[in-house]
Image 1 (cartoon, helix red, strand yellow):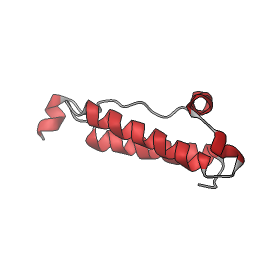
Image 2 (cartoon, rainbow, N blue to C red):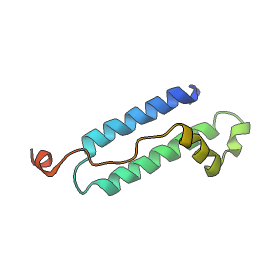
Image 3 (cartoon, rainbow, N blue to C red):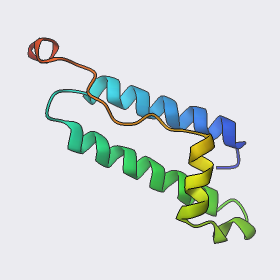
Image 4 (tube, rainbow, N blue to C red):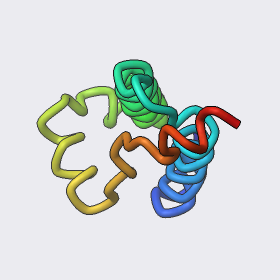
Length: 85
């Protein structure tokens, strides 16, 4: 929670890439998108708890922050042939 923003971004991006790599099967996009939204919500909650001033951060400010620190979007990483194995 108290790490610098680039470090937090790297950690959340690694979590998302690992999740997409493991659960990125065909027809699982809604679950991947839900996990992506929860990670974003968790990151905003962590940023709001950093200090009393940052509690005022709203979604618009968070959107400008995530424009600079982009998180990987959900994607299917396995094909149908790989899903059968």
